[in-house]
Length: 317
Ligand SMILES: [Zn+2]
Image (cartoon, helix red, strand yellow):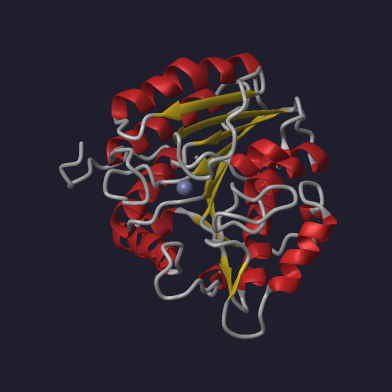
């Protein structure tokens, strides 16, 4: 399988302060892991372009884009909400993070690549059409999904979100769009504390208890996500890949392991091989414990590539 790895150096210049979990070291840990394991040489690296205003405005209001832009300080830091800190390079990083999804969709829709992984920050799935929140400025995956639907011959997409936090922004943006199936697993009740609406043919929210482990997570995917995806028959699959449900990640209480991230990646590849003809665009959301983040992203990308993943040597099976 041909898999693109899309990022941009400015994503590491989005400075959130010395004590913030959503930090530049997340991306350098992933890059180090890819170099150490030799995976870097097997991937096609692509520099993320900047998303255009037109591409952002498919999912965000003009007021939102202008407000975020106006809040960026010339020096030091500013807060868009209690958790969401921006600094001079944050806007450039946010435009590249959203642009990575545009490039990913263009490559995959054209058949040039089978799949793509976007290693970007700031993350995106909490950003609503008119609100930045939860470390997110623009909703990167929504920008990508809208691009597939508006600029390519793609009629229906599924967005699968396994971050431990509910993807409220993605859900809000596509709430009334029957071309989009949104499937999510998340710790509940938990941040973002937004209401979890009832499931529909286009929305499959599966809340997980705070102490959920592999069994509950895998049952959610097997019993709820997969049947919904098979019924919906998406033509391209998007993944909000957050790794903060890992047992080593103290951002949440859910206790997934490396093996669970390999397993869910395999399930996604398997279901994408049907109506979506294997087309997958995945992007980094959360994941704050650097060692498990780096390992699990490697596993996820190897699975997209169809390369057998080595057994983790962590004893976390
Ligand atoms: Zn998260």
